[in-house]
Image 1 (tube, one colour):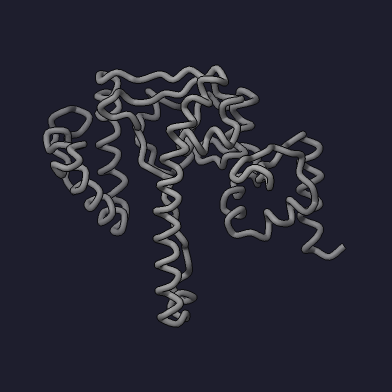
Image 2: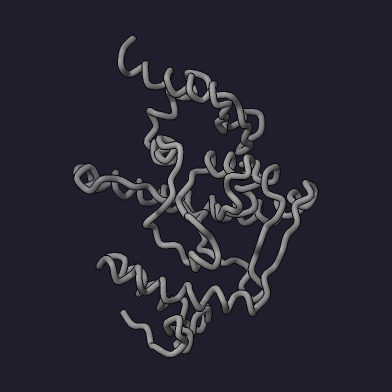
Length: 256
């Protein structure tokens, strides 16, 4: 068998032995997802696609105990062994009791991924800050710089315009679907819990120093964080004030 066909077949065989399922889109219901036992064609499409290659990269190892990605939560007080997981791994880890909790996308996407079947609680912030994490529904197209520079100028402009339009269209669609998703979760018996203002203050005590710690590790990270911080401090947003920018001791001023 050619090497290119051997890998998908091996993956399918391993998935079958371990009774793993893969998410597939339904043609009859747009954006609806069904979990099915993988076929050879499903696996072949997955390994050929750059999008899936990124999403399933962490499936190459059975376990992962530590991650060096920034986590805006106190590791010792809130979670143990944090790490990145794709939707497939997170779903099955929750289903089997390996994972206690998972921070994924938003209600509409999470519902379509089937998380209402394996996670019976959703924890949100108080009405003043209903969401604890960043918005993640906007999309981007990532292209290597040499390939991008090789494109004609008019093609670059078309790609930029199409990406922006898709991003806004998707954002508007997701906001609409998010509103409807909450009732769907409730119908499945999922309990929605809101943290108190006191809970948020505890999170911020650890999270804000972590922002600065990770921002200082890379020049681009510093630049991106400085821009985001300035936005959060504007009167229009008012999410962060200068008085909050202190270390865990509550006294030492944090700076970039």
